Length: 182
Image 1 (cartoon, rainbow, N blue to C red):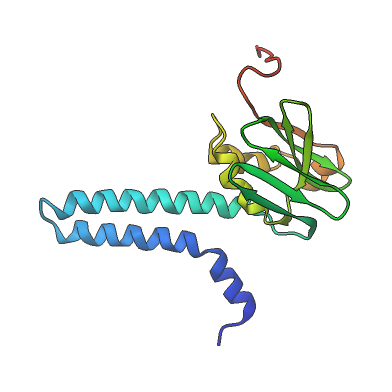
Image 2 (image 1 turned 30 degrees about the vertical axis):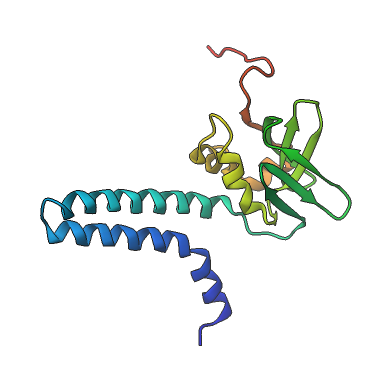
């Protein structure tokens, strides 16, 4: 009954829609009035807004593409299985997260305390699970993750990739040197 493309688009926006429905429920409760329903409606409305904003960020983070390999996140461990390379990184041992450009692709570069690194294509299958995993890192916000994927102001995304993008997204406190800016 529904075309597959339209069904895929609706499925992709389902979390944002759910946040909107929760917001509408809260506004309806506020409209009913009363000492009990107004505060309850305000709380539900705020939860709906928070859910919709988080879903919108998650939607912007998920980059469609056809990069090789599969990403899995399981109990604090990120696994990438590619056709030629792959590996595992524990989020607890992660000290640095970078976004780099290499050979026409954007890659997440995850570095552990022992120096091992794992490169994961941004468009790999299952990479949307990285949003929640990276958001759980200490000091990392979901807004920072979405901002990291956007090209710098005045730069074309293809030029950034071709130019060897190397952007620090997150670093664990106490690891590496921090340069003061003037």
